[in-house]
Image (cartoon, rainbow, N blue to C red; front, top):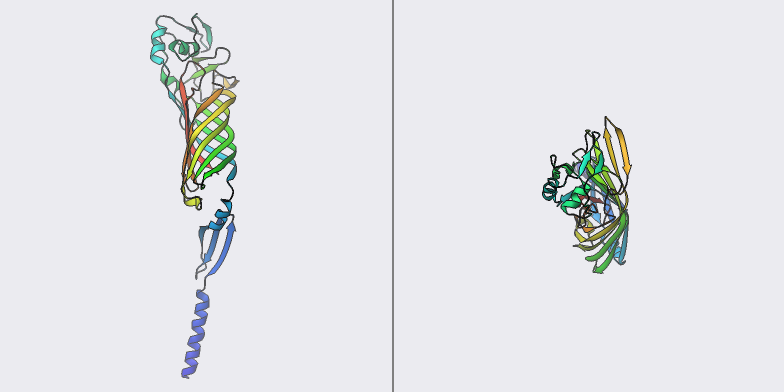
Amino acid sequence: MKYKILLVLAILFMASDGMAQVQTDTVQIKGLIIVKNKDTRGRSNYKFYQDTVYQKNKLKKNLHTKWLVFDFGFNNYADRSKYNEATALNFFAPVTNIGSSGYFLEQQSVNKSYDYSATGLNTFAPRSASSPLTPSEFKLLPGKSVNINVWLFMQRLNLYKHKFNLQYALGMEFNNYHFARNISYLPGYPTVIVRDTVQFSKNKLFAQYLTVPLMLNYTSNPLRPGRAFKASFGVQGGYLLKSRTKQISEERGKIKRTDDFNLNKWKAGFTGELGYGPVKLYGNLAFTPLHDYGLEQYPFAIGVRLNGF
């Protein structure tokens, strides 16, 4: 009887030990190892690991490429235009005659200046002395002034132990500037900006550039990029491909105009990115003004970078 009891207890122990065993499945996607476990209650849990062997083999190559990197952020600009000087100038030389529709009809000033002086500002955005030009007229709606960049490819060239790299790309910048005030760009040469007479529900300037950034990159841990701090800083240059305005109002409906709108054909500035693991933030600051003359506004953008290094 004693031996029968011990035999039953041994069978029950072995059965309970078999039930306590954990089922495991492993999946590897490139350098990422995913381990799926099931506990005694049948609930699944996942653990993620980086395959350092895969990463070491990958680092044998000095040149790496990412295809279709995307940026999503917001635009604004630092405005250094000479509004006070332009206002003072209007008292001595009225420059505009604006009709009831808000459109610029005639420019009366003989001494035109195509630069960033007060005279250049009066040429580009003429106002009468009784209604002086103010910086608030070019205020943007930050939440609607969206910056989207599509980098067709981005490459990183090893300079030293894969910690220091040369990073460059080729892509398109899509900049949207949504104005909070009712101003209108009138195409032609010279382009003129007027204070309009209607209330716009949408008032946007769009500019598209072909852009090439060149940066020096630092990666703290090349073997574990998912746990590495990354920083890149450099310069970028762009060429204006397309620009247009879009306005929507009850009085005029939807109006689109395509022109260069006195925008600089070439754009140059500083660029950089900061990140940890897969999370990356980017920033751009132009050191060339947005417009060719008159308004001295220096665009900048900040946002999130997806699918980058």
